[in-house]
Length: 289
Image 1 (spheres, helix red, strand yellow):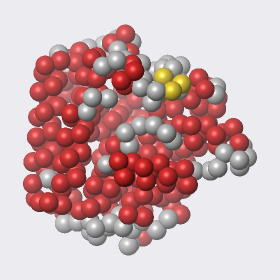
Image 2 (cartoon, rainbow, N blue to C red; image 1 turned 90 degrees about the vertical axis):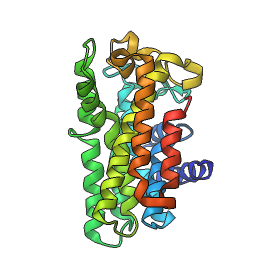
Image 3 (cartoon, one colour; image 1 turned 90 degrees about the horizontal axis):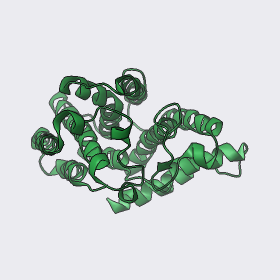
Protein backbone atom coordinates (compact mmCIF):
# COMPACT_ATOMS: atom_id res chain seq x y z
CA UNK A 1 0.00 0.00 0.00
CA UNK A 2 2.81 2.39 0.83
CA UNK A 3 4.14 2.32 -2.73
CA UNK A 4 0.79 3.29 -4.22
CA UNK A 5 0.25 5.99 -1.61
CA UNK A 6 3.65 7.52 -2.45
CA UNK A 7 2.93 7.21 -6.16
CA UNK A 8 -0.37 9.02 -5.75
CA UNK A 9 1.26 11.85 -3.83
CA UNK A 10 3.62 12.35 -6.77
CA UNK A 11 0.81 12.02 -9.31
CA UNK A 12 -1.44 14.52 -7.58
CA UNK A 13 1.44 17.01 -7.28
CA UNK A 14 2.13 16.61 -11.00
CA UNK A 15 -1.47 16.75 -12.21
CA UNK A 16 -2.50 19.78 -10.16
CA UNK A 17 -1.62 23.35 -11.20
CA UNK A 18 1.68 24.56 -9.80
CA UNK A 19 1.42 27.21 -7.09
CA UNK A 20 3.44 29.68 -9.21
CA UNK A 21 0.66 29.81 -11.83
CA UNK A 22 -1.93 32.57 -11.40
CA UNK A 23 -4.10 32.72 -9.39
CA UNK A 24 -1.31 31.67 -7.06
CA UNK A 25 -3.30 31.72 -3.82
CA UNK A 26 -6.01 29.44 -5.19
CA UNK A 27 -3.53 26.95 -6.63
CA UNK A 28 -1.53 26.94 -3.41
CA UNK A 29 -4.70 26.29 -1.41
CA UNK A 30 -5.79 23.49 -3.78
CA UNK A 31 -2.49 21.74 -3.20
CA UNK A 32 -2.78 22.33 0.54
CA UNK A 33 -6.19 20.59 0.48
CA UNK A 34 -5.16 17.58 -1.59
CA UNK A 35 -1.52 16.86 -0.78
CA UNK A 36 0.40 15.58 2.25
CA UNK A 37 -2.30 13.78 4.11
CA UNK A 38 -4.94 11.12 4.17
CA UNK A 39 -4.88 7.35 3.85
CA UNK A 40 -5.59 7.44 0.10
CA UNK A 41 -8.09 4.62 0.54
CA UNK A 42 -9.98 5.51 -2.64
CA UNK A 43 -6.87 5.48 -4.87
CA UNK A 44 -5.85 2.19 -3.26
CA UNK A 45 -9.26 0.79 -4.24
CA UNK A 46 -8.84 2.08 -7.80
CA UNK A 47 -5.51 0.26 -8.15
CA UNK A 48 -6.76 -2.93 -6.49
CA UNK A 49 -9.82 -3.13 -8.76
CA UNK A 50 -7.61 -2.40 -11.75
CA UNK A 51 -5.66 -5.57 -11.05
CA UNK A 52 -8.79 -7.59 -11.85
CA UNK A 53 -9.06 -6.06 -15.34
CA UNK A 54 -5.29 -5.91 -16.02
CA UNK A 55 -5.47 -2.13 -16.26
CA UNK A 56 -2.28 -0.17 -17.04
CA UNK A 57 -0.90 1.63 -14.00
CA UNK A 58 -0.70 4.95 -15.88
CA UNK A 59 -4.46 4.87 -16.45
CA UNK A 60 -5.18 3.91 -12.85
CA UNK A 61 -3.03 6.77 -11.63
CA UNK A 62 -5.19 9.35 -13.42
CA UNK A 63 -8.49 7.72 -12.48
CA UNK A 64 -7.36 7.51 -8.85
CA UNK A 65 -6.32 11.16 -8.90
CA UNK A 66 -9.75 12.18 -10.20
CA UNK A 67 -11.49 10.31 -7.38
CA UNK A 68 -9.13 11.71 -4.75
CA UNK A 69 -9.67 15.27 -6.01
CA UNK A 70 -13.43 14.83 -5.58
CA UNK A 71 -12.79 13.53 -2.06
CA UNK A 72 -10.49 16.46 -1.23
CA UNK A 73 -13.05 18.94 -2.54
CA UNK A 74 -15.75 17.38 -0.37
CA UNK A 75 -13.57 17.69 2.75
CA UNK A 76 -12.79 21.36 2.06
CA UNK A 77 -16.51 22.09 1.78
CA UNK A 78 -17.62 19.81 4.64
CA UNK A 79 -15.28 21.58 7.06
CA UNK A 80 -16.76 25.03 6.34
CA UNK A 81 -18.70 26.78 9.13
CA UNK A 82 -21.94 26.40 7.15
CA UNK A 83 -21.46 22.61 7.10
CA UNK A 84 -19.60 20.70 9.84
CA UNK A 85 -17.62 23.73 11.05
CA UNK A 86 -14.32 21.99 11.80
CA UNK A 87 -10.87 23.47 12.30
CA UNK A 88 -8.65 20.39 11.95
CA UNK A 89 -8.25 17.94 9.07
CA UNK A 90 -5.44 15.44 8.46
CA UNK A 91 -3.58 16.86 11.43
CA UNK A 92 -3.44 20.42 10.12
CA UNK A 93 -5.79 23.43 10.01
CA UNK A 94 -8.71 23.07 7.63
CA UNK A 95 -8.58 25.00 4.37
CA UNK A 96 -10.86 27.84 5.48
CA UNK A 97 -8.81 28.27 8.68
CA UNK A 98 -5.46 28.27 6.87
CA UNK A 99 -6.73 30.56 4.11
CA UNK A 100 -10.30 31.90 4.35
CA UNK A 101 -13.87 30.75 3.72
CA UNK A 102 -14.15 32.20 0.23
CA UNK A 103 -10.91 30.56 -0.85
CA UNK A 104 -12.00 27.22 0.65
CA UNK A 105 -15.21 27.41 -1.37
CA UNK A 106 -13.27 28.08 -4.58
CA UNK A 107 -10.80 25.32 -3.73
CA UNK A 108 -13.65 22.81 -3.66
CA UNK A 109 -15.09 24.12 -6.92
CA UNK A 110 -11.71 23.99 -8.66
CA UNK A 111 -10.78 20.51 -7.40
CA UNK A 112 -14.10 19.13 -8.58
CA UNK A 113 -13.76 20.58 -12.08
CA UNK A 114 -10.13 19.41 -12.31
CA UNK A 115 -11.24 15.85 -11.56
CA UNK A 116 -13.44 15.80 -14.64
CA UNK A 117 -10.80 17.57 -16.72
CA UNK A 118 -8.44 14.69 -15.95
CA UNK A 119 -11.02 12.11 -16.99
CA UNK A 120 -11.58 13.96 -20.27
CA UNK A 121 -8.02 14.74 -21.37
CA UNK A 122 -6.32 11.38 -20.67
CA UNK A 123 -6.88 8.07 -22.48
CA UNK A 124 -8.23 5.84 -19.71
CA UNK A 125 -10.14 3.13 -21.56
CA UNK A 126 -9.89 1.21 -24.84
CA UNK A 127 -13.37 2.29 -25.95
CA UNK A 128 -14.62 5.91 -25.94
CA UNK A 129 -18.02 4.78 -24.65
CA UNK A 130 -16.31 3.19 -21.64
CA UNK A 131 -14.46 6.40 -20.85
CA UNK A 132 -17.71 8.36 -21.17
CA UNK A 133 -19.29 5.91 -18.72
CA UNK A 134 -16.43 6.57 -16.31
CA UNK A 135 -17.29 10.28 -16.39
CA UNK A 136 -20.94 9.43 -15.72
CA UNK A 137 -20.06 7.11 -12.81
CA UNK A 138 -17.95 9.73 -11.06
CA UNK A 139 -20.45 12.53 -11.71
CA UNK A 140 -23.31 10.46 -10.30
CA UNK A 141 -21.24 9.52 -7.25
CA UNK A 142 -20.47 13.16 -6.51
CA UNK A 143 -23.92 14.62 -7.18
CA UNK A 144 -27.34 14.86 -5.58
CA UNK A 145 -27.91 11.09 -5.89
CA UNK A 146 -24.53 10.45 -4.30
CA UNK A 147 -22.13 12.31 -2.04
CA UNK A 148 -23.75 15.77 -2.16
CA UNK A 149 -27.17 14.27 -1.54
CA UNK A 150 -25.81 12.27 1.37
CA UNK A 151 -24.37 15.42 2.90
CA UNK A 152 -27.78 17.09 2.61
CA UNK A 153 -29.39 14.13 4.38
CA UNK A 154 -26.70 14.38 7.08
CA UNK A 155 -27.47 18.06 7.64
CA UNK A 156 -31.19 17.37 7.88
CA UNK A 157 -30.64 14.50 10.32
CA UNK A 158 -28.72 16.55 12.91
CA UNK A 159 -30.46 16.27 16.27
CA UNK A 160 -32.67 13.39 15.09
CA UNK A 161 -32.63 9.66 15.77
CA UNK A 162 -32.51 7.66 12.54
CA UNK A 163 -33.48 4.04 12.08
CA UNK A 164 -30.80 1.69 10.79
CA UNK A 165 -32.27 1.67 7.22
CA UNK A 166 -32.35 5.49 7.24
CA UNK A 167 -28.76 5.63 8.47
CA UNK A 168 -27.62 3.18 5.81
CA UNK A 169 -29.45 5.09 3.08
CA UNK A 170 -27.69 8.29 4.14
CA UNK A 171 -24.22 6.74 4.20
CA UNK A 172 -24.66 4.74 0.99
CA UNK A 173 -24.83 8.18 -0.57
CA UNK A 174 -22.53 10.31 1.60
CA UNK A 175 -19.60 7.88 1.92
CA UNK A 176 -20.39 4.78 -0.07
CA UNK A 177 -21.04 6.39 -3.47
CA UNK A 178 -17.47 7.63 -3.95
CA UNK A 179 -15.99 4.38 -2.64
CA UNK A 180 -18.12 2.49 -5.18
CA UNK A 181 -17.01 4.85 -7.94
CA UNK A 182 -13.36 4.26 -7.06
CA UNK A 183 -13.77 0.50 -7.45
CA UNK A 184 -15.75 0.73 -10.69
CA UNK A 185 -13.41 3.25 -12.29
CA UNK A 186 -10.39 1.11 -11.50
CA UNK A 187 -11.98 -1.90 -13.16
CA UNK A 188 -13.08 0.13 -16.18
CA UNK A 189 -9.51 1.22 -16.93
CA UNK A 190 -8.70 -2.28 -18.17
CA UNK A 191 -10.26 -5.22 -19.98
CA UNK A 192 -14.07 -5.55 -19.84
CA UNK A 193 -15.35 -7.70 -16.98
CA UNK A 194 -18.17 -10.20 -17.35
CA UNK A 195 -21.52 -9.00 -15.97
CA UNK A 196 -21.36 -11.38 -13.00
CA UNK A 197 -17.82 -10.20 -12.17
CA UNK A 198 -18.89 -6.55 -12.28
CA UNK A 199 -21.88 -7.37 -10.07
CA UNK A 200 -19.57 -9.02 -7.53
CA UNK A 201 -17.29 -6.00 -7.60
CA UNK A 202 -20.27 -3.72 -7.04
CA UNK A 203 -21.40 -5.79 -4.02
CA UNK A 204 -17.90 -5.60 -2.61
CA UNK A 205 -17.79 -1.83 -3.05
CA UNK A 206 -21.12 -1.31 -1.31
CA UNK A 207 -20.00 -3.43 1.65
CA UNK A 208 -16.65 -1.68 2.14
CA UNK A 209 -18.28 1.73 1.68
CA UNK A 210 -20.66 1.11 4.57
CA UNK A 211 -17.94 -0.57 6.64
CA UNK A 212 -15.76 2.51 6.21
CA UNK A 213 -18.48 4.69 7.72
CA UNK A 214 -19.24 2.30 10.60
CA UNK A 215 -15.56 2.29 11.57
CA UNK A 216 -15.39 6.08 11.15
CA UNK A 217 -18.23 6.41 13.65
CA UNK A 218 -16.48 4.06 16.07
CA UNK A 219 -13.23 5.98 15.81
CA UNK A 220 -14.99 9.31 16.29
CA UNK A 221 -16.42 7.97 19.53
CA UNK A 222 -13.30 6.22 20.83
CA UNK A 223 -10.09 7.62 19.33
CA UNK A 224 -8.25 10.82 20.21
CA UNK A 225 -7.92 13.96 18.09
CA UNK A 226 -4.16 13.37 17.85
CA UNK A 227 -4.72 9.87 16.48
CA UNK A 228 -7.43 10.83 14.02
CA UNK A 229 -5.91 14.07 12.78
CA UNK A 230 -9.35 15.67 13.05
CA UNK A 231 -11.57 16.70 15.95
CA UNK A 232 -12.68 13.58 17.84
CA UNK A 233 -16.15 13.27 19.35
CA UNK A 234 -17.56 16.00 17.15
CA UNK A 235 -20.47 13.96 15.79
CA UNK A 236 -21.83 13.33 19.27
CA UNK A 237 -21.44 16.96 20.30
CA UNK A 238 -23.28 18.15 17.20
CA UNK A 239 -26.09 15.64 17.66
CA UNK A 240 -25.38 13.78 14.44
CA UNK A 241 -26.87 10.29 14.11
CA UNK A 242 -24.15 7.64 13.87
CA UNK A 243 -23.93 3.87 13.93
CA UNK A 244 -22.68 4.14 17.50
CA UNK A 245 -25.64 6.25 18.60
CA UNK A 246 -28.08 3.95 16.77
CA UNK A 247 -26.58 0.55 17.63
CA UNK A 248 -24.08 1.05 20.43
CA UNK A 249 -20.36 0.34 20.30
CA UNK A 250 -20.44 -3.45 20.45
CA UNK A 251 -23.13 -3.93 17.82
CA UNK A 252 -21.37 -1.41 15.56
CA UNK A 253 -18.18 -3.47 15.78
CA UNK A 254 -20.15 -6.60 14.93
CA UNK A 255 -21.72 -4.86 11.93
CA UNK A 256 -18.32 -3.78 10.64
CA UNK A 257 -17.13 -7.39 10.86
CA UNK A 258 -20.27 -8.62 9.09
CA UNK A 259 -19.70 -6.16 6.26
CA UNK A 260 -16.06 -7.23 6.08
CA UNK A 261 -17.18 -10.84 5.71
CA UNK A 262 -19.72 -9.89 3.04
CA UNK A 263 -17.03 -7.99 1.15
CA UNK A 264 -14.76 -11.04 1.13
CA UNK A 265 -17.66 -13.24 0.02
CA UNK A 266 -18.32 -10.92 -2.92
CA UNK A 267 -14.72 -11.48 -4.06
CA UNK A 268 -14.94 -15.28 -3.95
CA UNK A 269 -15.19 -15.62 -7.72
CA UNK A 270 -12.03 -13.64 -8.39
CA UNK A 271 -9.54 -16.00 -6.74
CA UNK A 272 -6.05 -14.61 -6.26
CA UNK A 273 -6.95 -11.58 -8.38
CA UNK A 274 -9.10 -10.21 -5.56
CA UNK A 275 -6.38 -10.46 -2.90
CA UNK A 276 -5.61 -6.76 -2.72
CA UNK A 277 -9.28 -5.85 -2.54
CA UNK A 278 -9.64 -8.31 0.32
CA UNK A 279 -6.65 -6.77 2.10
CA UNK A 280 -8.23 -3.33 1.74
CA UNK A 281 -11.48 -4.60 3.26
CA UNK A 282 -9.42 -5.79 6.22
CA UNK A 283 -7.58 -2.48 6.44
CA UNK A 284 -10.81 -0.46 6.35
CA UNK A 285 -12.38 -2.45 9.18
CA UNK A 286 -9.29 -2.96 11.35
CA UNK A 287 -7.75 0.53 11.02
CA UNK A 288 -7.13 2.63 14.12
CA UNK A 289 -7.12 6.09 12.47
